Length: 341
Image 1 (cartoon, rainbow, N blue to C red):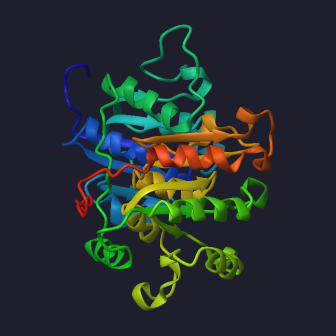
Image 2: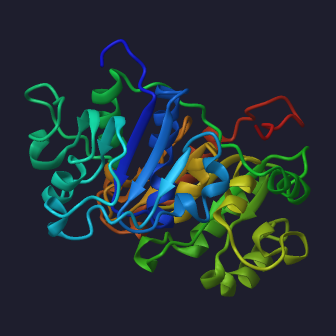
């Protein structure tokens, strides 16, 4: 298929819950950038958040979803009739369970790419001596490079619903430097101490910036002590008069578009900030940053290992403040924020 553009592309995975979906977004954007005119079908054995909470940002990226497809549900799929036999110009298998790959490969196709069994079932393979990328997005992009010949630079921004962008601007109006702070994480051992986030917020306020705390439902007991220590801090996620009840990750992404810079633990929120391509510092303790760090244009990670430890408590406050200050440079002229495209 070298030199030709496929008219249909299928991507297969087992499922995507919210964390998986946010994590893989850079790959999804690169996929569309590689083949802007192809019909892209996302096939999953189970459900995918791309057809659920994240579907509004899939407009223009994924054309069709086939959830609960039956493909990959059991090893018997290798011999049982397929649920359908549509032909795809390209099929990219993103998982490595061999019998699922054997089932998927039965679909009619022009080019089949799969990492299963060390690429033995793939029509194209990495060069000998290749080192497997540690980051999942880089592994997915490697599959895309095999299929398309390169990994294109995707647009940084997702297309958010206009009402969310409007409400985010109402919550964080133009004219200030907003510093996003996400002190939570799914597991508390991944949290940098709250009092250190507060110290960072105080330092940002002293520099004339506005600390913006992103708190989830399990972190509401932190609101009062933060508010007392940092009177200028904002808590836009808790503004139910603006947003209504309920949570959507798209709201956090819309707010993060307004940030001059941001700080987060290794968490789902860090990937929401990453989806907004906010200038971002992510903190890592025992979890490997090279595998889980968000992909952003500007920013990076601070790890406990840099300071000779393994725990989040080994990361000192001053180093975080200095790194955040380096990022807190306006991306645009005063009052000019990225538009929702």
